[in-house]
Length: 138
Image 1 (cartoon, rainbow, N blue to C red):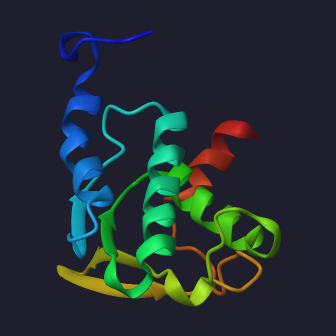
Image 2 (cartoon, one colour; image 1 turned 180 degrees about the horizontal axis):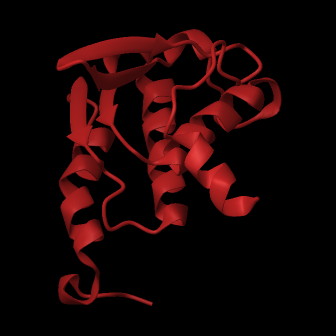
């Protein structure tokens, strides 16, 4: 069903320039802040897959810097690492980095969160991200 630009939500119109830049071969580094805003979770994981597809296609020539609060995007990243050996979107855990930023005693602390080859975090996740979901479920 074709849609007119006036018939899509704000999330689609805001993410469109990012998607165009992501698929252009001559664009090397792309950064975006909270791409998940106003996007359905299904579109969030598709966006994560788009970044992985482009990274796989252009390898070292394509870099995405994404600031996100979306557990859907982070979980998709981990899933693709777990599926790497038999998936169409393989992702080596060494090619992905998660950096957690938090304010502590008035200063911003930057903490890398390592990812294992099994698609899991190698250290405990800081408070307030995934545990919120757990509180709602149980």
